Length: 299
Image (cartoon, rainbow, N blue to C red):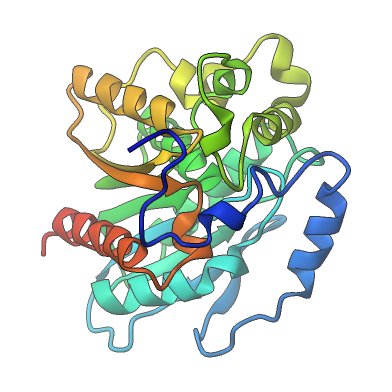
């Protein structure tokens, strides 16, 4: 496989742009996302988790007794997207796992830079842990892209605060390291949907005034102490800008004594499972996440 060969299931790859967002297009893309109709068949219930923070709650079809809980964090490069965009996935996870899934609508950069989005996610986690139908010993956190990066940071924050101990951090092609934006040793031709320019915009927006002296908690890959974190599942494609940083993070977790399963998808680009959700490779990627969560919850 050459650097520009994509997975055979991903037939749209050669038609997709290297990036979908830039400084001039951000407002337009945000507006278009707001125009997308909310899916009613997912039966999401919107609750207020804290000041300025709402969550979308998905309950399994039948609930008897305490259930596992999953806090889900949406992607969007820290600068776009909303919890509603992942309604379909959250509903599927709730039904397949018999779990209560809560998707948090954290506030976005640059209007709300670090640490506000991360603290919003922690507010959502505390709300989930206080839910009367959730088993506090079976809570997981997860997300994709920027949501995966926030999940990794949330795992560190939860460890440091010591109030909630997630059983798994599920990180789908997580955005973990701002330094990938400036690498010169990678082939940009293989990227789709998110490239180095997009990454630079996302991180600069999120870090804001902290960019000069980056707090380690803002960028998980910069955090030195990864000991005592929850077990992790990390999945990423070989044609994703985040591939190398995700593999490096998995190695660091293992070196710190943290169990970490690493799922590499040959020829998959960033967000492939959203863009081409019905393909075999995307369905297999979702099944791997369900399996990881089910195992963490105890079957």
